[in-house]
Image (cartoon, rainbow, N blue to C red; front, top):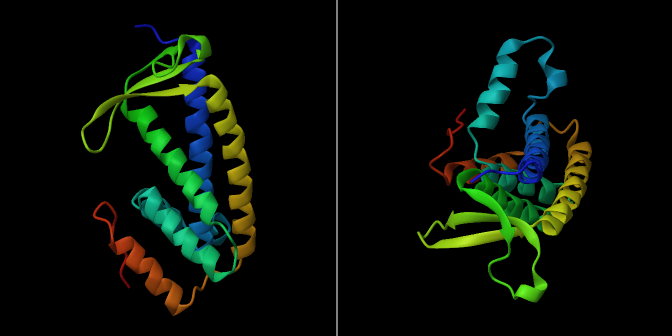
Length: 187
């Protein structure tokens, strides 16, 4: 089955936008932990530490930590984190399943929309088809751009706050320790 240029471009655009969001979250955490690009001053070990830490913390853990930070500085970001989790689910479907262009297999013939179908197997093992219309993916792209702007606002609000309180540090460590797919960070 040949994959069209259109399918590649929509999936590529979604993944590129998602990586921008994840990179912004990494910047937020880097700022908080004093591992920002500005703080490196040519010190390669800090650059290495930044990439080792950020690449070994699951995105959902990073979101939990960012949420803790947002709550501490009194910024309402709960809905943003829910939306990013939804994007993460879509991203996982896109990168882990076969796809092809088709119409939505679950709707009436009169309401057909062209889009991308994914042969998805859920975490519970049930096989089903996930359909994302091109129109839906266009809306997701716009929403991802807006979310990334809001994340940069959060980044701006935490700039210079690289010494989190002991309470926040404790909450962040608990969030990190709840998963097996992360490096546990200890003092």
